[in-house]
Length: 229
Image 1 (cartoon, rainbow, N blue to C red):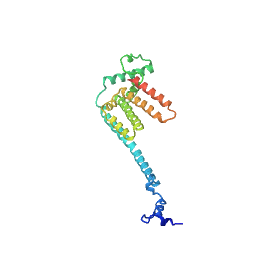
Image 2: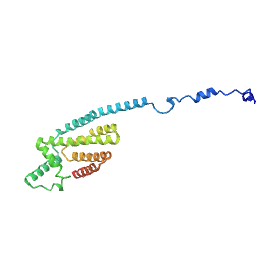
Image 3: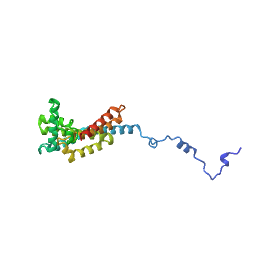
Image 4: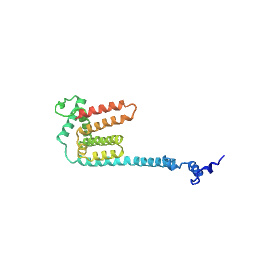
């Protein structure tokens, strides 16, 4: 029979079968596979873990600095003036309520002219006033406002992350109304704290399987805060 190679076109070059086979048998390089190597994944995990550790270490010092700044700025106002008419009215009503509980003293109709519930905040403020005077009652309000800042920090951190929590807490801590509420013996600071506690209970319940107790506590805190004002 005739030779196929001889019958082929003499001017046409023969295909290089060895080079094609060499290209076909070459294994794919790891860089072209599109998947990160195990070493790269481990390095990324180590970097993310170290970053999370640094953020955890900075979290509490930053929060302590914010609370300390707020406390110092509010304490400057605690001894700056005497009791206002509203503060004196609440403290007097608290002493009368305590005397009524202990000795049955007649109580004026405070609910007709005094905003809020006269049986919640006024007795608590009157107890602190009996210990250290007006300054102690004002420092009690400062404690409530500091607690509201702490709850704001935790709520913002759960919703938007660490940076948002820092910005929200720092901005809230240096606002003028915040500093004034921390230096007045009025129920507004207590109502603000209960409102922040209500929001925290609702937000924190989303990560729990049994969220009913926290939701119920949030409703109670909100109702008491509304009752105080």
